[in-house]
Length: 243
Ligand code: ZN
Ligand code: FE
Image (cartoon, rainbow, N blue to C red):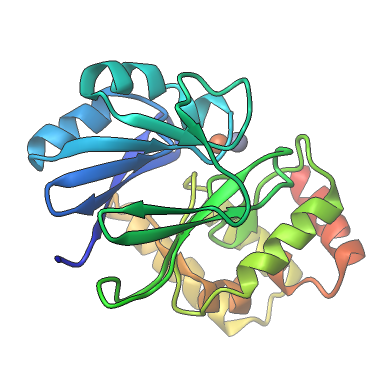
């Protein structure tokens, strides 16, 4: 079996959708729009089999029904009536098998009440583990607390820090530059953050995405993972909300 690969597809103003590709078959994570996904499928000659959603927000599900109509793909999501076209719901501890790629479902509430992340552990066929985490963890940031509680989000972020350091992080939005600027205000002496700002600006200037990050890098730079406890986390989250 070939090593699975990930194709990053920008959507809307700052969303990312992802194709997880195994051979000629693909699963899409969080299709905000159908057209760019269909275009990528045809350009890479891929068949879409699964649609995976991390949460119900329109910028993660709006392409669901058109893609399902166009490809016959199966829609898999957390249990949430606001997600259109769902065929199968998943939650904490479930595992999916996408043509030999193991996908573990992690409940990661906080941004919403029922958000999930999809974790692919390294294996014989996957050299580096991967995480698709929607709006829970961002590069150098985390999602806003829209429906979940601070304790939910804190526990979700702790859970993600337990994943292997080399885990590649594919998140839902390109918010990195603003996040790094905020983080530098908190930790101006953090060398990794200063280097990250340079790298991020270079990538954005070239029109390249700043994903994937990885868990080890986030532990060195992400203020929400570096908070000492939930109180400090709450203080940071409130401050970032008005940054
Ligand atoms: Zn969201
Ligand atoms: Fe979003």
